[in-house]
Image (cartoon, rainbow, N blue to C red; front, side, top):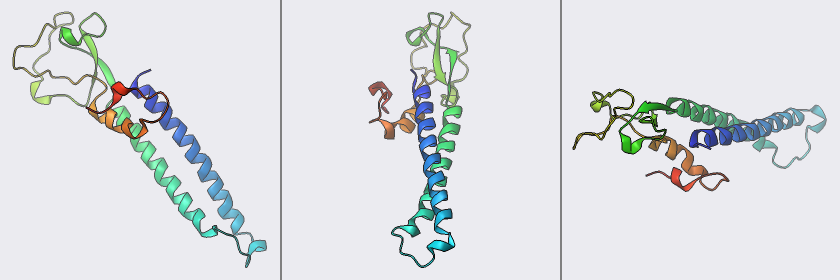
Length: 151
């Protein structure tokens, strides 16, 4: 399982539980508006709108996480041989996190030998630091791998 796949599963799980909590918060708010309950003491009645607001905020955060994942999704690219991952001189790299000042290194597939000394690779191997940081608060969850820790 890749970091992207694992993160998508975690986001899906968090979204489902947040939507369930939002449903119950909204149901409770509607129930509390029932005229039969007017004047009765109901502990915690005033907290449900705060729960609803927190759920909406969490859903917005999860949407943002999905957008970050899409922006930093890895793709296959020609790399120097020490970074080869498939025997064809290619590796999974972040399409967003690139060393943009070094884009003139574009060898043909299978011709990616070691970069000249002092030359910085024009690619960043996946998973990039952004995805590692996105996953770091979830490090205690099942399935998280130690190699995904931020550098």
